Amino acid sequence: MNSKFNRFELIKSAIDSLDRSYAPYSHFNVAAAVLASSGKIYTGVNVENASYPAGICAERNAIFHAVACGEKGITAIAIIGGLNGQITDYCPPCGVCRQVMREFCDPEHMTVIIAKSTDEYKEMTLAELLPESFGPDSIV
Ligand code: THU
Image 1 (tube, protein in one colour):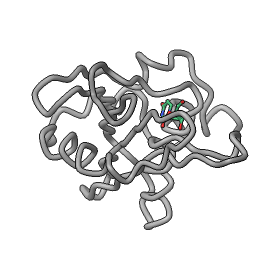
Image 2: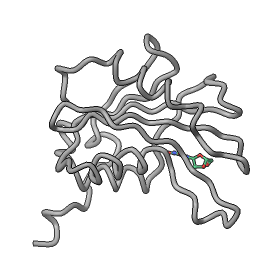
Image 3: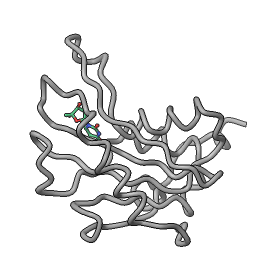
Image 4: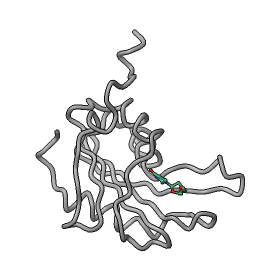
C-alpha cells in the first residue's frame, strides 16, 4: 500500500472532474484521479459513444492521460461515480480497468480508493482487487 499521499487532494481531484463525464447513454457519470510516480495527479472521466463499445471508463482515461504525459508508473487512484452524477454509493473499478492498472504499478503498493466524498471512502491494494494477476513480468 502506498500510504504517504494526500487522500483528500486525490479524491477532490476526481470529484472536481465529474461534471466533465460524457455519459449520455447510461447517465452513469464516473471520474478518476491517478497519482503518478512523479507525484503529479492526472484525471479522467468516462466518455461514451453512440457506438456503445467505443466508450471508455474514467479509470482508463485517467491512466492513459498520465502515460500520454510521460508517466511510467502509478501509485494510487481515486474513483467516484453514480447515476446522473449523484454519488450515493461506491463505484468499484471494472475488471478491464483493474487489468490496465496492473500494467503500470506494483500491485502490492498500488492504492485503490473508492469514494463517496473526501471523508467517506474505502481503500485497498490492487493486489487485493486483482489477485494472481497477469502482468508485464508474466510474459518475459
Ligand atoms: N464505468 C466507468 O467509467 N468505470 C468503471 O469502472 C465502471 C463503469 C462507466 C462506463 C460507462 O460509461 C458507465 O460507467 C456505465 O457502465
